[in-house]
Length: 255
Image (cartoon, rainbow, N blue to C red):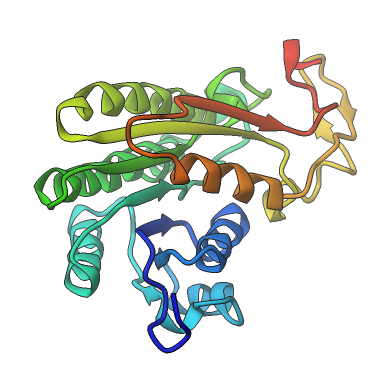
């Protein structure tokens, strides 16, 4: 790769790239020479997220709503128009949703959480799968952002936890259904990476016994390293599930 040519590496789509894990992972992909399409709801957040990153001038910024089928189809059409294919999808967009006991969760907030976290993940995977199946050479890789909550819940997280368990089912189905087409799918389950979403954990987070306790976090750059490792494997290999968490966070037994 030479400076005047710009990035010539694989093409990756990063959803939820305007902040948090998505932002850090998108910048890591750019730094590693990938051709990166970043998406989220707000263009200004996307522009700010990649500002100053290596290769940012060559990035494709496409605002989209992952919960809207037409918006997702437009996103992937823009990527195909620009680069002709999709090699990697980092299916990252998500929201924590309402924090309440199940009987106190408003139905509209439940539906909003499902729309973003599960339907959005499916719609992006669906569009990526179709592109990867049709392109030549055929194949690609989908990396879903699960969560520790894809394995065990936090208190007051029925909506989030349910959607993340759903993402695990989606990951397994994509892995199976992608086999004939050279499409791999894996999932990264992240616990307490230091982002805006976990900013309050050091002050105290609700525990299973009803108490509030400070929780450790870890540098989100390690998440980016892990995603880059998963994405960089040849298609004959796959990391099916990878869990990365702060060493002392409540996880094993949620204690």
